[in-house]
Figure 1 (cartoon, rainbow, N blue to C red):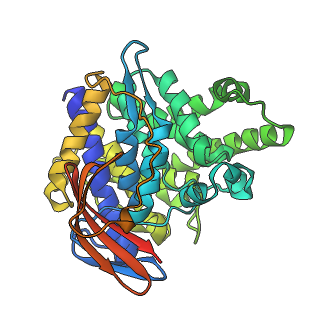
Figure 2: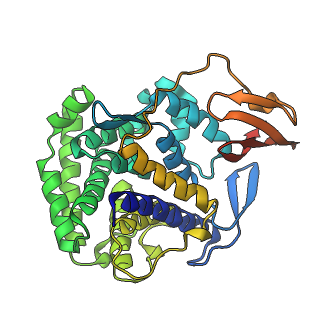
Length: 383
């Protein structure tokens, strides 16, 4: 299997896992069969979703892919944060999920970094978005630097940072060394954690940690080492809680990955219902890199599968520095899409040529459907 196929299968499998988890999160049942379902976006809006609809986890991953810059001269792939901010501003209107931390960052801007949630949130929802950084960088040290920078854009809790780096280590190991046994992979992760030093992070992010943070960082390393040791035996060692953190999601993802490797079905009961989709997203992504089972996922069962497959191929092109992406140049002229009337055609700074093909106003919200070269967008804005 070529590296490009591995990358594509990893991404398309991630979207499959997300769609499966999103369905089960909202359907209150454990099913492997895609079907229509209802999703409550917020208190004002409940939507009927199509078969195979993926969640904000995939949306965030797609946004990250669009924000990648392939710097051939420096042999690295980085994130264009100017574009990321603009993409997230638009995403807020078409999202399928409630990524609280990310939405709070959008709402509060730079003042968010003084919010206690930035320092204290251990869940780090949506950390699966960094998979695009891992898949497109050939050098792990460069990828690690970009992972830390992206995690800390929304969260500085040491557990979430460690989870992001471990996610990177898992993917690089599977890409470079092939399928690993449970014991082999867990031992490699333990060795990686032990080698991590707080001062390495300080150099990478150009920030000196407080004594309190240093103690917290070392404690989270110990917690992870103990958790990985427990996982060596079997999944029954996983602690099942009503609410879990980023460590719990990653460990559940690993357990489901090993189940898939064995040709078994994933276990929906390893996480609370609202964490199923991220654990499955990662598990299916890991599995997609090096499948040992003859069974394969039905990619055609997910929404817009051809587009998703094309983005999986796009990851390979970014990794091989074929696109020479240029940084995003913000347009100083703001465009309020919800002020535009039906039939209006504009050139949007993110969407490019865009046409308003549907407009609907209700008492509590406005709905727009946009036709763009990159596909159709359905936007909702609360009044």
